[in-house]
Amino acid sequence: MQRLLVILFAVTLCAVSLPAQDTQTAAAMAGQQNGGSMPVGFGATFIDGKTYYLVNIAPEVAFGNLGVGLDLNLRVGTDGTIRKEDYDESYDYFRMVRYVRWAQKGDPFYIRLGQLDYSRLGHGSIVYNYRNSASVDLRKVGLELDVNFESFGAEMLYSDLARASVLGMRGYIKPLKFTSLAKVPVINNFEIGATYATDVDKNAHKLYNFTTGQVTDNSSISIVGIDLGLPVISYKIFKSSLYFDYVTIMDYGTGAVAGIDMHFSGLGLVTISGKYERRFLGDQFLPSYFDALYERERYVPDSVTFESKAMALRDAKSQEGYYGEVVMSVLGTFHLIGGYYQAPLGVKNRGTMHFQLLTGDIIPVIQFSAGYDKRNVGSVFKLDNNSILSAEVGYKPYPFMMVSTLYQWTFKEKKEEPSGRVIGYEQQRRIEPKVSFIFNF
Image 1 (cartoon, one colour):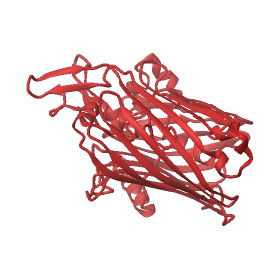
Image 2 (cartoon, helix red, strand yellow):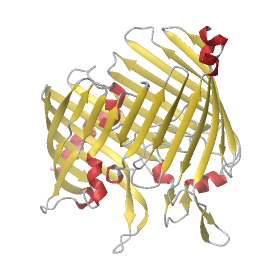
Image 3 (cartoon, helix red, strand yellow):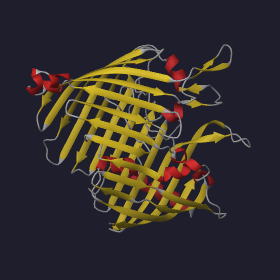
Image 4 (cartoon, one colour):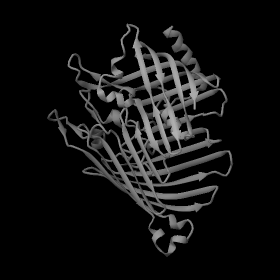
């Protein structure tokens, strides 16, 4: 039976030919409407060859600006015992809360508690598509907070409310709004921003001395940056601006970014946004330091060859690179994001790919959501230590019923037996077919 389910999933995934993302990110991309739904699902979960029977309840409610999403799972093994990794720590119970939010990002006031998927600050030169959870079993409760006024504002994130971790803050001001030029179109939106981000996790700054064989811990990693943004075109159907970022990683190197972004909404049914950057990176500098793979790369204990993000930073060489991103929305329900960044000029397969897809209701009975991040791209669809993938495809034979399959390729902690000491990370593959009954209210 397990083999049959795996084969059916593989056939379905090949048919759509796209990788994937989780439903929380899909909901964030699509926005929320008043009311709510409560899917109750029954199925199975296959995790690294082990089989569990599954009951899943995932209510999602939105009333005005308030939105709440939960994710309650009961996985019972073939021996009748509950999967211990789901509830082996008291903190695991907080993971049932996928998110609690007020408003949407871009509104005058926005706050979100829960799992952070694809968070960014400013233009993304320091924090870009950051995920605070390496896998479902390591899911954390983080915070995002934005305050946006006409002339100034701020945005903030904190990755883990239970312990010391990644903190990022950016403030911005539009100085011409306070002068006689306040009423001059376009140029009055000239923006100056400043960003500070740090990781105060105990493993944030571990380095290895190959001569002495000693591991040193240098406390936190801190990054500061300033950014400028200048609108050049501002029409209702088409907007474009130029921007420049200058970033310093404290005790390490510096980098600069010059870019252009565009937003086109003149087709009525289709909205398209895009951006392109040239990056000028000095020695010991990594752009978008806090990204989708950061939680896995921060520190890999007891690896064969010592691995940490700080080591990669220390060894980074001066280079020029580029970054491009395209965002497309159709009918407000189909969303596609594709990006390629940290790519050195003239060097193949060294960049990082980011992909998101949400089909929504554009296909009446089929729904598909996808999120995929891969560093050192090479073979795009080959999953390895540099990949994070989550995909879900569903079929709705009736409005109240969904037949779906979820596939995830993420990471879990590798622990030493019997001490339980964490000695690294290893891939985790999970396949989850289920039938859900959807109660709308």
